[in-house]
Image (cartoon, rainbow, N blue to C red; front, side, top):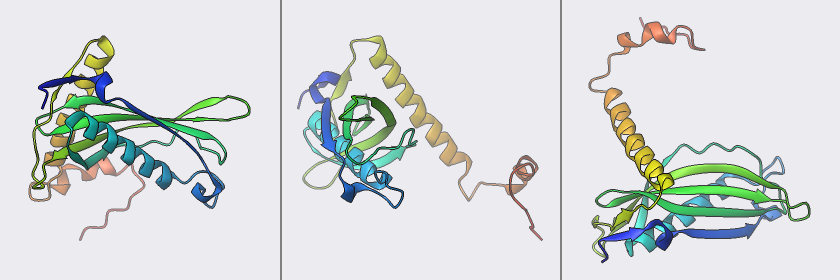
Length: 181
């Protein structure tokens, strides 16, 4: 296994035509179909980087910015943004293109944490990342801090240490009725 790999070495892109079978009741492409495609490309990118079978550990926020129409081409682009010891953060960008007008829309971006698995099913080390530009440093740093913030948030709201009285005053202005007797 190589000790380090460049972002370019594992970058992946796919384009697919959106068919009527991909649509929801509103006539737009179903978000679940797009999530499935995103998971597939994140797997391909992480597996290419690690040269191992990879599993999805988490998905960081998916905001659907623009709807995707049946008949449009959807392009998904994925690259490794961060490498830990056995995990990788894969940045995935989704764009749609109207075939007749050529109009392109950014539909969403998300970050998939993927973990490399050995043949025995245990986590295995992954190659580090060679970063060669400011954009790469920005993406790596953002992923590192997003990971730290998630750990802090999870710890802060663990049920065994959570005290609801610390938050009740804050929640009074929300669309909630607290009736704890």
